[in-house]
Image (tube, rainbow, N blue to C red; front, side, top):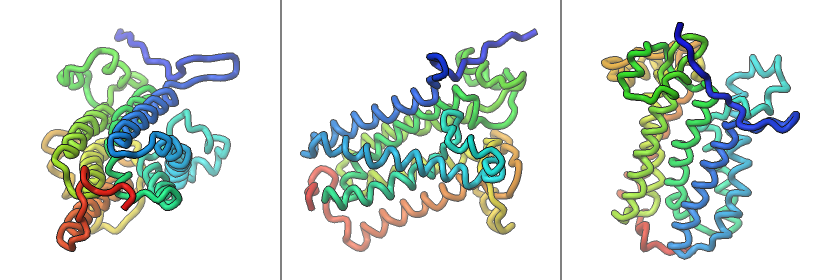
Length: 300
């Protein structure tokens, strides 16, 4: 008999109050991201208080957007369990919804504080992706956002420590640690975005490169998951998405979808990749991108 110990998602219980690892990890990710942005902002001549104020605007909007996005695609469940709509400690925060909420709040923020949107976006892009790299470990603690069934020998072949392997054992079945794949992809992306700062690209390139890098990895990792948010789209689109993902089938089997024929995160990721590439090319060819990362005027 194979005995295993599942990590408790609750870090601390104080009477009726439970503090979940999910919240601790997300909070840690946000604080690290804030610290990094404040350091870079100060180097660029921005006050630290600007980023503290930004967090007050962006964090609630990101959480609200992430939750509303997730709930909207799982409404059949939440319509019958309305009390669970606010239970974010159980998981169910969609990153794309969080980005939408954060970007909208950011647009209002920069208008109020008169800071160019892309200047601030370039500064915080590495903070966002390192936050995503850390945040995925909240999914690990909740045993969610995993992929399809795999063997224990497969996980051992990845040279993972036993505590990760056993956390991927859910009711006696082992699953793809897709949280780990995405976390590592985001960590590499963080290093690349930081490196871009020293290349001194045109304004907006770091931010758009973030959209491209993260979305490219998310597109391929999402295809392994079994809990994807989905919708029923036209067959030609579903076939096109499957064709784009097909190189992954040389290594892995795609995760099963409970409903629909298109994964929402894959579709949005594809749009973001095209948007990021399109914006970089447009700004370069049109001459809009005049200022560079280290030389542009913060108050321009």
